[in-house]
Length: 106
Image 1 (cartoon, rainbow, N blue to C red):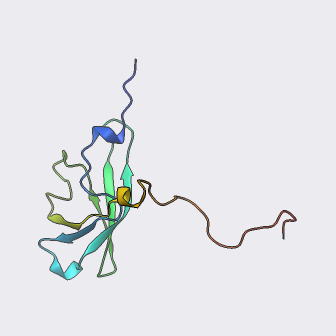
Image 2: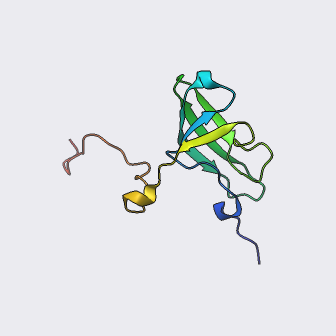
């Protein structure tokens, strides 16, 4: 029987919507988590992308059990966006916004 590897097997540091600061790079300003990526492959990476006030996006390891985790590189959570407070669901993913087509195909 093969073991299924899931995100539960990793200790995730940051979540979508969390706000952070870097203890050594004040010039970056605060950042916000804009993307999370966790591989389901055993030994795969666990990454988080942050958008900082200086306008740059930076990507960090997001697994607390990994020596290169964002925490060990100086990122500290300032606030957390707990989606559970808003009904326990995350915003819809991949939903297209804009004009709806009619049945006639206009």
